[in-house]
Image 1 (cartoon, rainbow, N blue to C red):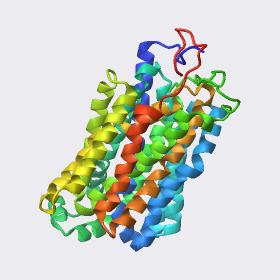
Image 2 (cartoon, rainbow, N blue to C red):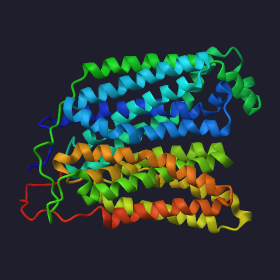
Image 3 (cartoon, rainbow, N blue to C red):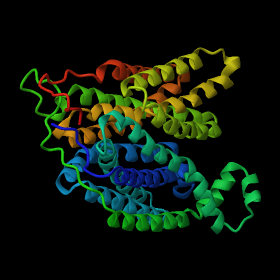
Image 4 (cartoon, rainbow, N blue to C red):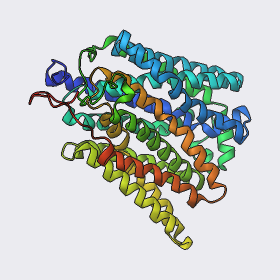
Length: 421
C-alpha cells in the first residue's frame, strides 16, 4: 500500500490547494451570514428565545442526519460531483432563505437552513478529506489548517461584506445608522436582508459555474488496506478503528466547546466574541506553518491542555478581575485554530479504504455544536463558572486524544516505503 497521492506536478497540486482554499472561503462567508443575521431573524419572524433556538438545532442536527449519506454518495459519484452537489444544495438553501424572508415564513426559513446545512455537510465530508489526501501524510494537517484558515477568513469578513451590501440599499447615512440604538438599527436593516440573500445567491451560482469548469482529479481509496494491526476479526467496519471512533468524540467535544465559548462571549460582549473568531483565523495561518515542524498529535494535545488551563484560571479569578476572565476566554480562539483539522487528520489517518466513511463519521459528530452549548447554557442559569467546567472537560478529553488516544498499533508487515494514507 503506497502513499495515496496524485500523480501531478507540484504546480498542479498548489493550484488544487488554491481552489480548495477558495471553496472553504466561500462557504465560510455563507455560513457566517446566518450567524450575523441571527438578531435580524428574530425581528423578521417575531421569534421568542425558545423558538429561535431551533435555528442552531436545525443547523447542527443536519450534520447528524446527512453525513453518512454524503459519504456514500461521494463514494459512488466521486469528489468533484459530490462537492458540486453540496454547493448546489447550499445555493438552493440561499434562494429559499430569500423567499422565507420576503414572505416572513419561519417554517420555510428552517427548510432553507436544512438545505444549506446539508450542502455544507457534503462539502465538509468531501473537501476536508480531499485536502488531506492531496499530498503526503506528514503535511496533511498543515494543508488542512491552511485551507481552513480561508474558511475562518470568510467567517470574519462576512459581517463586513454584509454591512457593505446592506448600506447600498438602505437610504440612510451610514454614520446616522451606526449611531442608533442596537435594536433600532437591527429593525431597519431587517427590512433589507432579502437583498442580501439575492446578492449572495447570485455569487453562489457564479461559483457553481466555476466548480463545473475546473479540473478536480479523482482519488480512489477502496483498494487501500488500513494500517492498523488486526488483532481480531473485527476490523471490518470504520467504527472498529480506535483513532476514528475516539476522534469522533474529540470532534464532538471540540465543536461543542468552541460554540459554547462563543455564546459565552456573545452574552457579555459581542465585540470580544468577534475578536475570538478573528484570533481563530490568525491561529490557523500560524498553525499551518507550525505544523510543518511540530507533530500533529503533540500540537493538538498541547493546544487543548492550554485551553483548559485558561478556562480554569478564568473561573478561579476573583470577581473584581472579571474583565480578565473574558480576555482569557477570548484568547482560546487562538488555540482552537488547529484543533478541528488536527483531529480530522488524526481520525482518518491509516483508515485506507475506510477513509471516506471515516470522514463522514467525523463530520456527523459536529452535532456536538448543538448538544454541548445547550447544556452549558442550561447550567449557566445556576452558575456560569460551573457551566464552563463542561468546556474544561471537553478540552481535557481532546488533549488526551492528541497525546495518547490518536495512536494505534500498526501492522508489522509494512515496508519502509509504506506510509499512512
